Amino acid sequence: MALQANAQKNYNVAANSTFEVAGTSTVHDWVMKSTEGTGTASLMVKDAKLAGINSLTVSLLAESLKSYKASMDKVAYEAMDTETHKYIEYVLKSAEKIDETTWNLTGVYTIAGVSKEYKTQVKVTTSKGSFILQGSNQITFGDFEMTPPKAALGVVKAGKDLTVIFNIILS
Image (tube, rainbow, N blue to C red):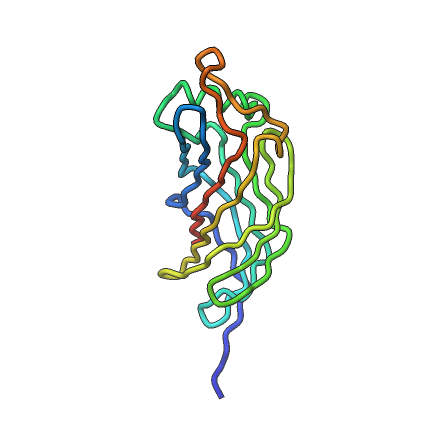
């Protein structure tokens, strides 16, 4: 009879985790990226495999998101009202295991001071004792009571749809 090791372990969001927000505009597609997310997770681990996600919180300094153009960053920060709401946050409410590598997470994003619940399917892999969660969510500016940014006297307008993409490394 083999021994099975069950343990609840605490993890931190590693510095090499990546976060992106992608969208469109009347001129071109755009993406803003950051590697400055912080957070913690409490995971159930059984025989070095993920058996449960008890908690997950992630916080990202909104102004750490950068595109290739400072002027675009500025209008994005205005849309998110980063002077008042400095962080984008995610708090897990529940997690359901679908199979060895797929989980459905339900959690709350808070952007620009507005909180909204989303369901997210994530792919989970392991590497050297760390767990990697990869996934994305389709959101809109309107979901968080933001107006899509405009530039060049309104000639360039962001589309209403956004994609939040994450690669969270828990170590």
